[in-house]
Image 1: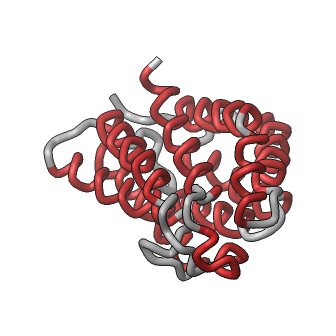
Image 2: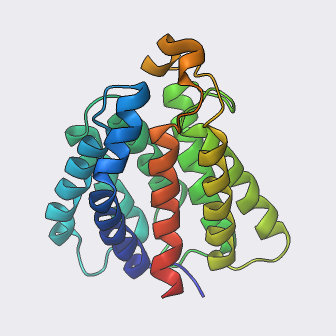
Length: 211
């Protein structure tokens, strides 16, 4: 099966729901090593996205949905998360511009472009204790699954599973980016909130297909 505009819209709706459900958890994670408002910011951003979904035309392609998410998150989400996620969705949209049905290659392109957008904006690498620690293994797993002949759902599932492990793997790390880097060794033992929200968003991308 291919990923269509219906998938993109369902992904956005479930993302908003999941972020709202985990708002407090994300705030708690961020309070331990950051500003304490990651869940609040993400919930506000996806709430704003939901308010604009009616702007999506009936003949829209997935990239138009992703562009709407990008522009809304950039304008409504505070801190670093807005520019980072906004750039991710924008680059993902550009990667699949005009494509009505995303096949395996397009799915990998979408995920890779999103990751590359975050790297471009945040300059983080694996081990910095950021959302990239979830994105990098997710993209690596997606590429490997495509090479093995996986479907778009297989690819999303592999990416989500790897992001789960990537988020967990941030817990023992000492942060090298952002406010958490000021804590030094005290950052150990806490999961990065950006890696956690990445994990939630990528899992939502799978769950809307799998149901």
